Length: 328
Image 1: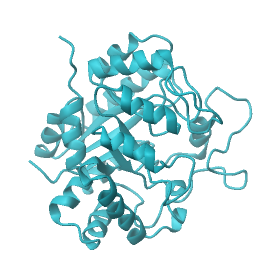
Image 2: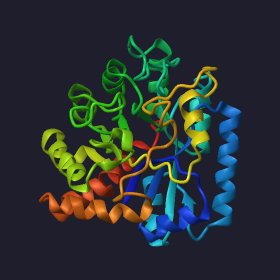
Image 3: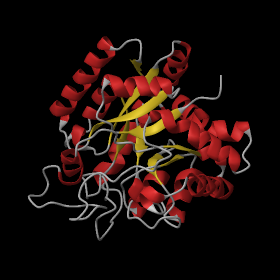
Image 4: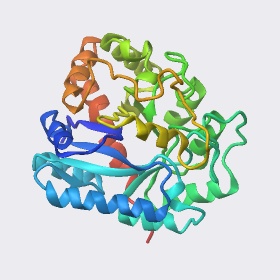
């Protein structure tokens, strides 16, 4: 089976409307953020909320645990939801929670958000001492249970070290090349090379702060960047990670950026004048717009197999290879 449509990351204000839009857009699977700064107990409550949605909307969505669930979702006309964390806060300071969270359904965990964590360094820190002692142990445990190491918000040295330390391929689920748009969150050549040369995945973000020209970025510009990146690192390592934050109130972006670590407002990639979510580009406003990207990639000269690889087949292969644990 091929021709999957998989989004490597979304953090929407979930609702039946968005679930229906995913079906209208033919989305087979989405990696969904269910924790930013939430601790273990708070994250469990987010799992509970999703369990209610699965019960209330069984015709639209289903819980994803394995790559085979993507195939099942497609066959039954639903979207498989895979869970991930944009911060290691859910494991608190206890490595034993990694396996428990994997059992609950987590399949991705970032070792940092923008700040230093107990595991690694975030991309907003001035210094990056790399993966910590605990970080090395947590990577080992994530490898064992089948939870993907995600370094989307991590600093350069930490990301390169994670790619080398991990015995399984890692991911940058949502970012773009720094040379195309020099945002703090976008990734330099040596970082992308470290991830992809070790078999990892790089997901292209449609979040405006990561786009060349921000919300005014054209579809042609975006897709040509993907084509150049494929030529440089190999198309087999690339996918989409839209970072779609649809229908979220601006109060949520404050939680994402500040959490409980500061009393002062941190504007991240925004500003005091524009503190909220930036407007999305006209060619990608919700899950019904993935077809625009498919057409844009084809317009760069990619053949159908190559377009399918970017749109989801590469993520599906990655899921098959990395969600299954090695524990006996």
